[in-house]
Image 1: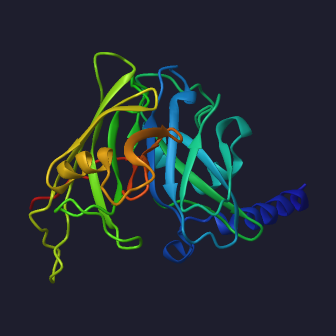
Image 2: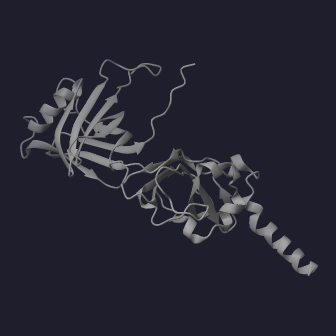
Image 3: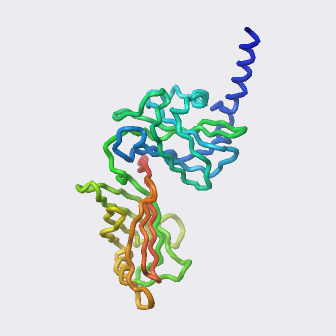
Length: 294
């Protein structure tokens, strides 16, 4: 009997040696920016969406994502994560993308219970590989199921344009890339949304200062259609110039804007039908960062 116990003791050591959260944490950590969102109204784990980034995939072969009740997060360990029943995690394969999006379907929490409204959850990720198993050091934000529209929330993204302030288009390869931050809010009509974003154009000089070209961008979005798009600063001229294009555009001189929801967190708005103008806005749902003013 003692020999059997000794055997299982050795086996457990082998299985969990690489799962030890105290082993080479900084060196092995590969997961960043773990964000958990409620994107639906079903009142179950089907409503939840997890996003995270990973540039250093190393020996990882698959991700295992778990939903932990907030009150249990301090008790949760790599060993418990490794031993969870399959109903309590979702596996996501390794891809070439830096940004990863994971949806849950009928997943139980790490206690084996249903994911329910009015209860807080935190997500963590187990990285599994042939010779590498580690629980992510970082945890997601705390999220709970609420009656929330799919697009509502804080977004960050980039706008790529070749429009200059004087109303002319730059040559290909010389476009501007602006960073935008803002919100998409649901309107009284449950299928319509209003987006409002701020951007800043960096100066050509030293430092992180911004020029007077900084401004805002607003749009209405419904059923993959942009019903209104307006901007301040040089974008104000861009909207007019793009939709009418310019005289040098000989074949197709009417541009328009269209939107596409590519998945639960990414919205693309692009310019179409103008041979000269360029407009490409890509937004990712994110978490508004708290600024420490001290």
